[in-house]
Image (cartoon, rainbow, N blue to C red; front, side, top):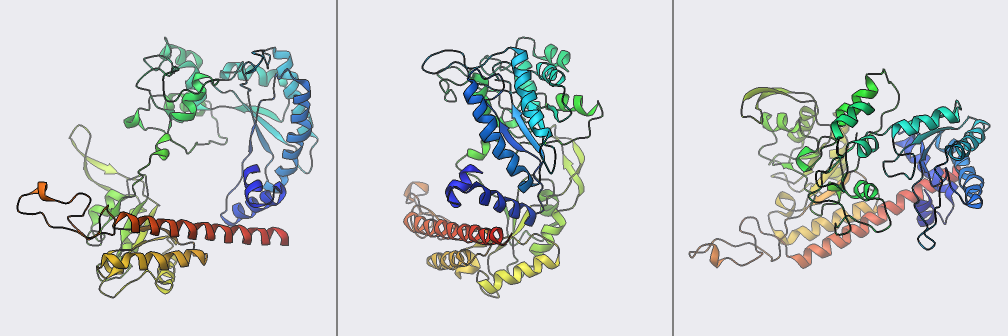
Length: 468
């Protein structure tokens, strides 16, 4: 929120908060809590502690009603010794920690129009409160009705089960300790996270470096995930827990440079097999319009893939099985043009939106700058992209991306008589492509267009805020 205020609202955090609330209302999103109120409990510097309460927390109390939430998350602190003095900056004295937390709970209890509640989390790299058992002891001793516990599968397993500094990636008695103690996953590293590891950051706890650099989505075992997610999660639900469950939707895979979105071609969009397969995948899939330029088959494909399917499949062991899917709600249309002509212009995009809305599908499209939209002439791709950019600057929010046929060199080539050795490097052997320099020009113009669209949305949000 502070970054948004500084970047777009002349440091006015209240206008930024109002804009966020307007956006959430428009998208039917509910804000559960504000986080993290941290580096507070057990702090030895009393003046700094008072500043956190009297300035930062007081501000958060004012932001909560604007965002329509009454919950603030508090993280157990992790400061370590001072970088210059090497002196301790926090205390593990339980009476001090409890007193600090009682102070903010009591302040929250007198807030109006609603009492502010707090949820307290133990991080697996916290200075003192780093297990759920220690966390629960704090909750019991604070003994306030508006002060509760925040249980995190990663931080539970990250302390008692996993040790990124160990060659095995586990604590010595990982399975035994897990069972005795009672999960976003994380990657088992190829080598111990020590000072020579690329994830190491001087001055930060090992588990913190691991958390910041090696998080994965749940069940990404193929990428090295190994934490006992289900065991820890089931421990909650077996007790009858029915409260909020939060999934941290980030993974280090999101930092990969080459993110690919699979597409289903114009001639395969009608294929029932492709629709069934798409219904079981956990990522967005584009469906190109038919070769005739019509959208019906693509929109029908999206609708079909969004529903559950059962079909004959094969297990990892190579055995025949009935595959059951839950549906993929993230399909979208790729506007590629066709025999009827191009379909990247404003009118065509609006017609696509209307058709999608009529079938109760999300109004999102990607524009293919090649194929039918370029009339199969690669030099027309920049013209298509330029038109898309102008639509973005006009606040067209249905276009989520473009497809460009691009390579290092322009055009295409056939395989010569002497074979692959005679091919020119970086020139396509299939469809003709634009060259790298032209690609850069297109991407820079589209990036500028996106910035323009974003600025227009922010200006619109400001106008709504001022009306409020």
